[in-house]
Length: 84
Image (cartoon, rainbow, N blue to C red; front, side, top):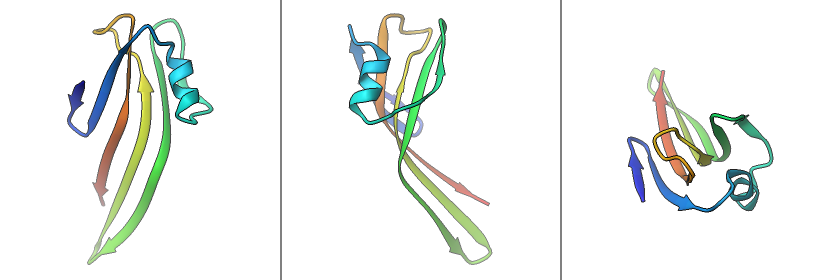
């Protein structure tokens, strides 16, 4: 298990990132090359007006690889709230 500032991720061995993305219903990768794989599917998105600000909330399912964990795949869910 790995934690990021806005995500909880499972660290998987012996899994192809493309296979993990397919199982999550992510059909198209954002990046898929020799150095990195990154795919994301938005599970929930809302925009809410609060006073003079807008709160934009996105919850997504994500699959990626990173240089610091060669041969491993990170799979999880992230939560982002932006206010503008």
